[in-house]
Length: 171
Image 1 (cartoon, rainbow, N blue to C red):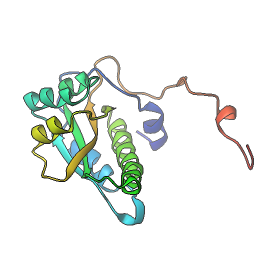
Image 2 (image 1 turned 30 degrees about the horizontal axis):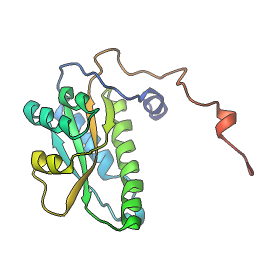
Image 3 (image 1 turned 120 degrees about the horizontal axis):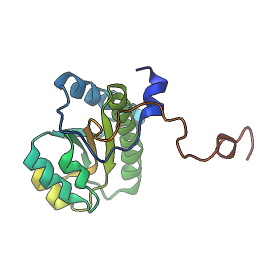
Image 4 (image 1 turned 60 degrees about the horizontal axis):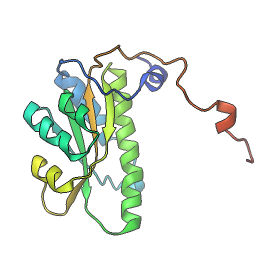
C-alpha cells in the first residue's frame, strides 16, 4: 500500500477476525512506534505487546469501553514513567501521539486494523502487564484484521470540510 492509501484507509476497528498477525508485520508496527519523533529525542515510551488470549481478556477490563481489546490479535500498551509534573505528562502525551499514529499507519499499510483505548484502572493494568514501580500505561492500541471489511481508502471520511478546517495566513 502507498503511504497516502495507508493514511486514508486507517480507521478505528473494534471487531477483529480470529486471525493472527504475522510476527514480521507485528515487528514492523512496533518499529514504526520506536522510530517516531519525540521531543529532544527523549523517547519516553516502552511498549508491552500482548498476544495471549487470556491476558488480552484481563487487559480489556482496564477501561469500560475496552471489550475490543479482548478480541484483538495483539494489543500494545504504551508505557511511560508515572509523573505528577504536568509539563512532563504533556510532553509524554504529545510524543505518544506520534508513536501511536506511526504504529496505526504502519498497521493500515499491512491491512491490519487498529483502535485505541484509554486506561482507567492503572492498578489492574500494572498487574496484568507486570509493570515495575513508577510506570503507568498511557494508552492501549489494539490490533487485528478487521472482521467486517478490509481496509481500503475511505472516500467520504465523515470529517469537517477541508475549507472549514484549513486557514491560510490568518483565521
